[in-house]
Image (cartoon, rainbow, N blue to C red; front, top):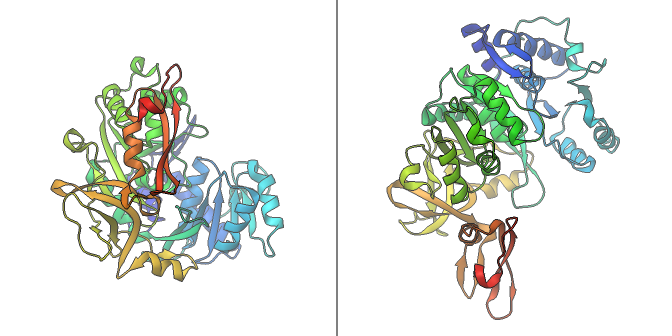
Amino acid sequence: MLVIGDLSRAQARRCPQKAALVMGEEVMSYAELDAQSNRLAHALLAEGLAPGDRVALLGHNSIDYAVVLQAVAKCGAIVVPLNFRLTASELTQALADSQAVVLMAEPMFDAVVDAALSALPQAPRCWTFGDISPRNAFFRCAEQPATAPDIEVDPTAPAMLLYTSGTTGAPKGVLMSHAMLFRMFSATAIEAGLTHDEVTLLAAPMFHLAGMNMALNQALYLGATGVVHRGRFEPAIVLDVVERHRITWAVLVPTTIAALAFDPSTPQRDLACLGKIFYGSMPIAPAVLEKAREVFAQVAFTQIYGSTECGMVAVLRAADHERWSQTTGREALLSRLRIVDDEGGDVPVGGVGEVIVDNRHMGMIGYWRNEAATREAVQDGWIRSGDLARVEPEGFFTIVDRRKDVIISGGENIYPKEVEAALAGHPAVLEVAVFGIPDDAYGETVCAAVALRPGHEADANVLD
């Protein structure tokens, strides 16, 4: 396997009748996933889609979503997964910037799609999925051949264009190659001991890097079974899915881990099947991790650190949680990172510097149609992450904050995430956000916005 379209092709040969995707009562085998995505790829090519063209995708998690991803890849085109929360003006901006020639959208988004397309001088062709109208992509491809299209896809070519706003305002499109994604799939499988026997919870939004590549495509890479959860993350419903389908592995974020760990029904559930949980995208509060490890005692927790631009950068393995649970992790397999000072020198243990990632191993091709931003982000072959980290012993490091978020008070650097972590440890604190405000004497001073847990009381004197 070399390119994203190979995921269904290869597994259709290796395990054709195995369930690739499950959603409710619907089950799609690997043979069916391969055949259906081939038909859709032929239909797209018949409409004039060419390798390198952009296909925008707007929808909630579904089996059809996964089929579209495979079909676009088999055409050698670039998929542009879009956040389903976009407003009409934001959708217009994304379609215009990506120069998408096709938009695949679920009909529930018709209103926002119509408004967005009306503002474009040249709108993409719009197909739907998840309905039974004549515009439906799968209606159009019903008579197409189930064999693979005769398209040779270059592994170094872009596979997807993901928009990320980060902390710099206007969204930027990140180009990711097939080859880089496959390095990430391989590294993830080895780091976490994943196998083809996994039954994977696909609850993270598929438009997101984690939902698409750490969960969906990772499961297809393994030849595992992915169980699609569609809609809001309701703990009771998700726990039902885990029990019913005997989920073995889930990709979550700290917020959803907390929702499951603190749900009163969790201790009464039969969750012995659940053996692995990946988490990342934001720091996890020590109290949440402690509760999760208590409730899910059999689970091997793995923290993944990375970004859309950098891919998977570091891992905190299950065994590392015994001694290093409050760190971010250490360099992941097939990645290469450094933590450097403002002059580019390596920071010693105990020091703080910026995480930079070797672009030859892991990371983006560059920003779409934005050479200036690419030059700023990638310097001398290294991607500047913008994240500041403290160097710990034995190769570990701890993210302390974003470079742009550091509070400089009286000439001292104060990292909001560290203050947030300290406040979050108070039993009365539910959520906290720390930021700097102007101060005549010190330049900036620390301000915290705190939400208390129901039934608890605390004031600034208590939390100070």
